[in-house]
Length: 227
Image 1 (cartoon, rainbow, N blue to C red):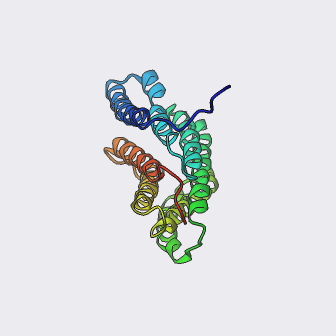
Image 2: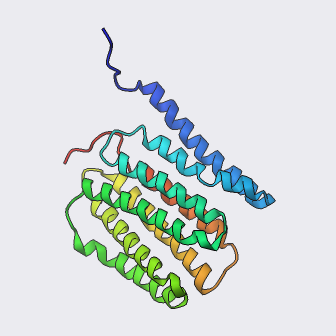
Image 3: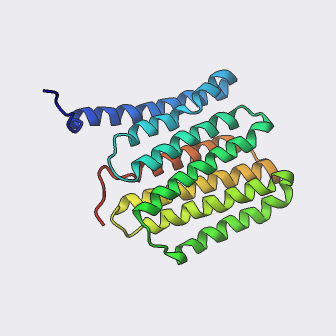
């Protein structure tokens, strides 16, 4: 008779987790080496690897949030590839990839914490409105997709905030910090691209972006949380 596969042994799961996080750090370090030494093709190949590393770690989770976050990471890695080419025609496809990635996060956050908590949306609406007021007048034909993206990321932060105080405990704070770090990184992209380029923008954007994705991944409980 055939045997049904049981749960992954604890040691094996721990090894996968350590390997995934080690690869996450190593791939970021390799990317910056390629970036600083001008190896553009290698840089492009390395860009999605941190997101894939986080996806491998999230795949070891068994909570209801795991699949949406896994989907968001993988969809976001397509955005990494589009934006890293530097081709202006790839900006909107990259933006759309991240938009759909945020929708996956929104779905996961809202499923874990369905209560609306409307007052928690206010600071994020204010934040995004301020950035949009600065950037949209200078965005030209990109104003509409950027405005739509701004609305989605505001909702993503709101739904991350709605988890705080719920069954996920401290993990919800990691998700909220990740969501706001994502918005901060995107705000710097918008300001640097449409308002005023500034020194050190690229490394700062990348560090806050990868930190955001890591925190969102860390906010996924190991097992299904009880309500």
